[in-house]
Length: 198
Length: 76
Image (cartoon, rainbow over all chains, first blue to last red; front, top):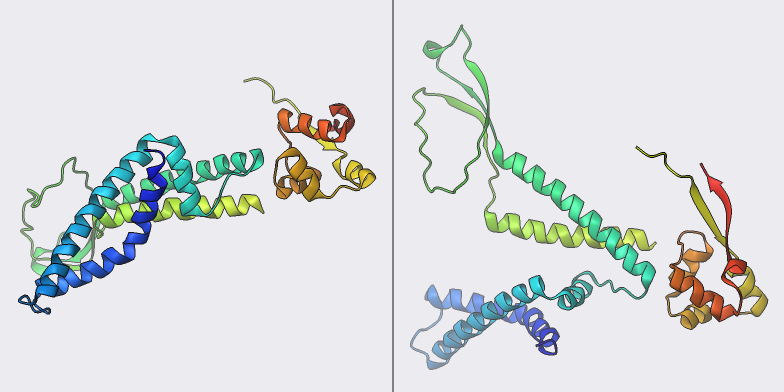
């Protein structure tokens, strides 16, 4: 398997643009922008599906290999960051850069956790609902849900309020956060490695 | 807590030895199996080589290790 891993990684990376093109074609096909009766387009749609399925299997396999194989990790890190360990000094610098990337990622995760927990709301209520003559309110909250629900069992607001500013956790999806973390890890590692190597 | 020990400053004579024997940084790097950047870092005092690399350098110059690397002063 060790022999095939670098080859499969190349297939995975070079297949990315092909997958993007096939995805665009599949979208056009499903939206009816392409003639469904044409044998050529049906064949291409089938090929797109097969290609995408194979690429997904490959991505899962490579992700698992990355988790379990140290030598493969080293190989991939070199490919992703364009940095190789050529001698003992660079091995030490790699360790320092990895430490920086790890610690900054932890800091980033803590920031994301805080941003996803905090609830801030600034609103006004009608004059008849004023409390001690005050109609402007600022509410601060901390929301932590262990499990994700489609609809949260929170009571509807009984007071008719006019929101001026309302923040209830991060407005980005889980996929975006994962992608942000991957990019953050690569950038922080690469940046600190290049700074150390100066 | 234990009292922090003073840092040792390790100095080297790589630059002098190279000049004496007319060896370039690239040649020395190849001879001891590291990159030229590492030789530059050692000569500049920015990197202390491992014991293994220090012995390889000493062997390359056919000298005792303490004639190349020494402790010059203690930084408080």
